[in-house]
Length: 152
Image (cartoon, rainbow, N blue to C red; front, top):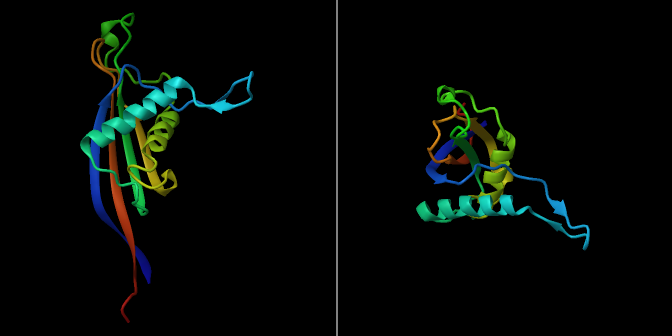
């Protein structure tokens, strides 16, 4: 007796941004004591949702297993030497904040909740030459589980 996982479908989409950002911590307004999400994070999450909806229908009711793979492509700054193109992207934002931002943005539209993500990967690709647009590619796979009894 065991559980078997079957891939139901997969989808991919990409978005170009002015700047790749990660999920920021909430802030507290000292005047009112209210918590709020920083503007940069709100705008980036909105861009992820918009890019997803532009290419796919909502799957916010899916409650199975989900895997998410994210790749980022960031250009060098203008002040960097051209020969630095192809260097590892070791700058901010951190890979975990990029993944958190994307999964939080897709809550309720690509899947019910990001707690369903049982495997996630973020790859920060080597820096591209100055002048290229920053881009994020997101690949989502949906799985269903089935309990199978072993034959005697």
